[in-house]
Image 1 (tube, rainbow, N blue to C red):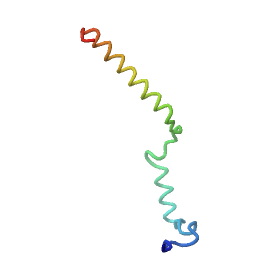
Image 2: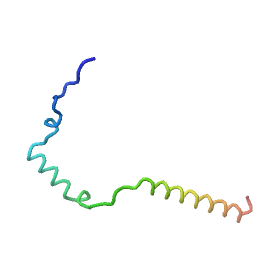
Image 3: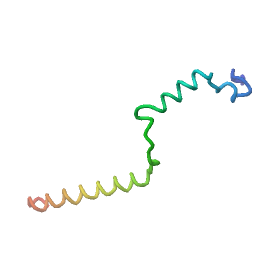
Image 4: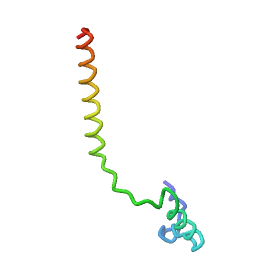
Length: 70
């Protein structure tokens, strides 16, 4: 199996020039990227989704019972 064609020291290969790093830093400081946010919590999203699905289920059963279907 042939070896991949990249430098042995990948840290040096990933370094940006000073001008490019300055452009990246400037981009990260403006617009939507400049706002600090709370960390994403996937468990909260799952529980919220479960609560919404349960609420819609109860609502649909209530409407069906009110309409005399169920």
